[in-house]
Length: 483
RNA sequence: CGGGGUGUGGCGCAGUUGGCUAGCGCGCUGCGUUUGGGACGCAGAGGUCCCCGGUUCGAGUCCGGGCACCCCGACCA
Image (cartoon, rainbow, N blue to C red):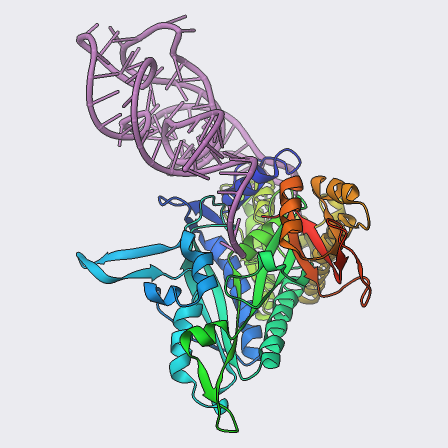
């Protein structure tokens, strides 16, 4: 149960986040360092993310499968850049059944290698392509510094893995799935993400190119909320994923991988939450409408509950997720605060006056106080509630978009101006040559990194001077402090 | 893995200077009165004081060593 108050965002955003994740019953710490217990309410939210993505994966022709948790250590070593990237954060099993294993087993940090091994077996001909696979799984990375949902040693995610006949097809798949992520983030999670390409420094270990959706949190820090990689032929060559083309010649496949994790839950919390608690987008909210019955004397109870029992089933039949809070030991005021902490988009109050007037009170989570509360006739309630939920969904996206846009600044020419922006915890959009030295310098000077070269370039076709070194730059990139 | 902080009923804390029956608020259980923005009364339950070792007649308190978590950095979905 939630307690009174959380640390205000303005006072300490980090504490606000950890307070709220626990008070809203999303997750708890575990006895194992860096791991978390996802509580039922948090898991329901994750299920919403999962279902929204899974639906889209299937609509784009992907099939789910499952690959083992344990990967032979030698597999990780087959792709040079990949092993270098992941070696420091591997958990390795060396003993099984009381005996030292002949070959240690790595607990998967990601599954490119073992899926590569399987693809090699499955693919012979161009007729087997494209192969479009996704898996929902847990992975383990030995992180030094962890935070609930944002970075834990074990996390849940999906990882898509596909194989194609050509570079172009693999690139098209990479971009398609980035688009799927953006569509989910914007339309379901109400997070106005920016799609872009990662710099070489920020690229996935073993990829030709990495793309991401980047979101701005309420403290203006950037959160990479999903990634899509064109792996080129790197893994195909390491695992001999080959097919015979229509000229009967042996070719290496072109593969992709893409993932979204439980970090998305953290993104939802930090994009929409306020000092009263979570604010969940209706499309993902485990509870869309909470009903709070109100009665003073015992003789009022009957008529009120009767109205509740009459009004709720049509809402449920309409597919609206409704919860009736009939706890009789708590006052209505307490319940209001309690459900606000949990981010329920819409509260439906019904008391003796409503029974008399054939009305209900609806209070919107996204508009605080009296302005967000109104009385509506019981007739046509399903349509009223639907309209309200749609309005809340749209408003959360609008608020987040406005917030983001007021903290984004195009900076051209002056490196000092550029530093001022990112050191002031805002995002700078500037010409960037993409060089490792430049990236390193920004990191040293401002503790910030490049987030991406946005697909949507503000000055397409033009060139500019890199904000850092002054050299020629073909594209502009976002720079920001990041999680 | 560096720097800082914190570990005492479920949660938040006091008690440590000055050694001996461990306390407060919230929550929890029961009963009654309440209920349109965090209700109240009465009666209860609940604690290896993070762990191990040491000093002492006696340790929540002093000493040594661990561990965990939080915050700030270096590395990362």
